[in-house]
Image 1 (cartoon, rainbow, N blue to C red):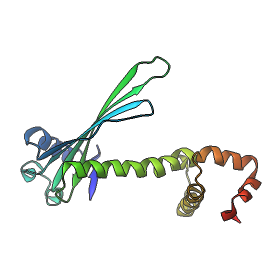
Image 2: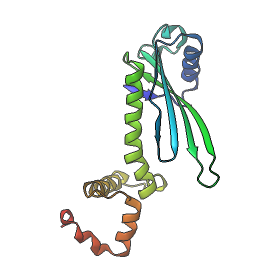
Image 3: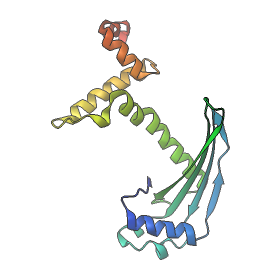
Image 4: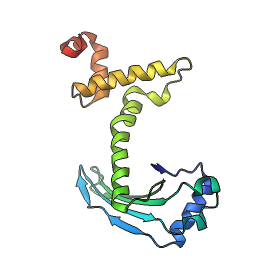
Length: 181
């Protein structure tokens, strides 16, 4: 299991930061530079596996953490209006209950973001899922959103929000898809 360490675990976060500051990395992986769509991205994955119990004081967590993973991202995005490259840097820390290598950790994080971008982001932007204030039987609405998203994916519809709008203007367009009948 690989989980991202967030700000809501402040004591654990402080302990893990001590690991990254005081211990030597077990392994580092520099991912190939990715270019495309007006951006350039560099990634570095660093894993720490030595002396973790010396720094992680919370015994509830210390027994499970086998690897601390630090992913550093540097992204340059070209501003089409000015022609300038805008740079952003980000550092994220992950914890694993298994001993894993830096390259594999980088792959796991990238694969997770694929799910985030293709599922959670679409649910939030196209279906406004985060803004829904459904109190009773909200699970049923989640199932309906999943059904709709599966329909769009099955029919290879790229822009879900645009297609939802088109269906709202003329719902009979749904019948042009044989799977709906």
